[in-house]
View (cartoon, rainbow, N blue to C red):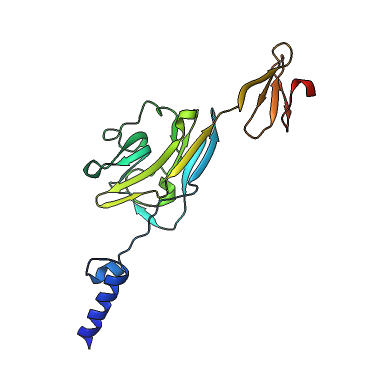
Length: 206
């Protein structure tokens, strides 16, 4: 009876969980500790944006681990991920691109390289001085031996222009109407102050 039960148990695992014939596959499934808080993110040029993970309750053993953020990463098989590196815990292996140098701040945990932490404590960065070219797909990668994780879905960042039109209309000396993406309108007055409207405006409306 015991041997029959074992066979049934193994077959159940085989059909439900894995093409590999093993009883261990039923109990060793792991949950990704790195899940993004948002996968669709929008921001305005010249501003800052934070990309971070949400708590999952799953710990990550950081002893000897390394992690990094990449833009438009591509999986290359034996070489792992390639792309534009914007943050790395080991720049000797993955140097940060000059495109992001001094613009990215790590806002996650700074508990060194040993210990156990929640995934969301590691997966947090802030990018400042955004430009339109920063739009793209961002990926967080964690590696420790055979323990490797990646955020899926990845973060899709869209950076919009500060103004819908840099100059809509000039109303007198140095008084230029600008319109933002949310259709609010503002004018920079000669004294440097801004006058704002919640709806689109034209000079003839003023």
